[in-house]
Length: 221
Image 1 (tube, one colour):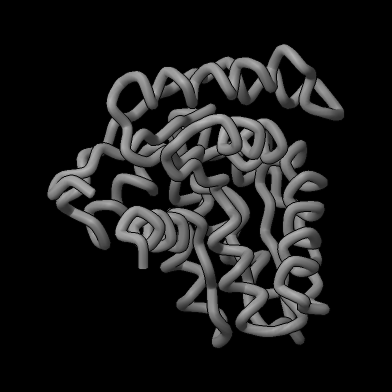
Image 2 (tube, rainbow, N blue to C red):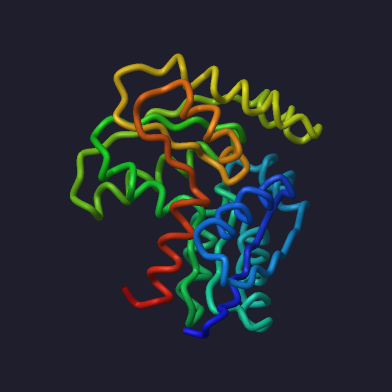
């Protein structure tokens, strides 16, 4: 791996950019971030129950573009395109990560009963399926219960991060008898500190976990 690896960050919404930048700056400052944004992906996904073939093709195309641009590793930041990202990963010769796979692995290690706070409802079903699949792969009986807080995403898209964080934290405070809380999206990670102030169980965010896993994969450790 180069001393200064280029990491392509592929976004479906601009609100995901800041959290992953913060995670990279904190845990992997020597990495060179390359941001690719197509903010039509999120609304196009929101109107479809499943990922349409053309939309999946666009995700694969973005991954190929990132590789052609010199990316040594690729990280998608939108949690609503899991199966399409898996297709891209099978085609490329560098690590390609879904946004939540590392976070789900960590949650499964923490315990059997996990809560997930979701702010973009169309991502919920795919993420639940992804968690279940990873639990099977890890031979775990871990479970995931989702809680949707759509007003938080609406506030964030209007530029009101404080309200977003407050709403996510308020939902987290209501959750009892869970081993860990996972914050579903990259954009939700900005609420991690607010949530951690209110609960006494592990709070996992996808940017932190994803950066750590991608770094391990690229170092071969």
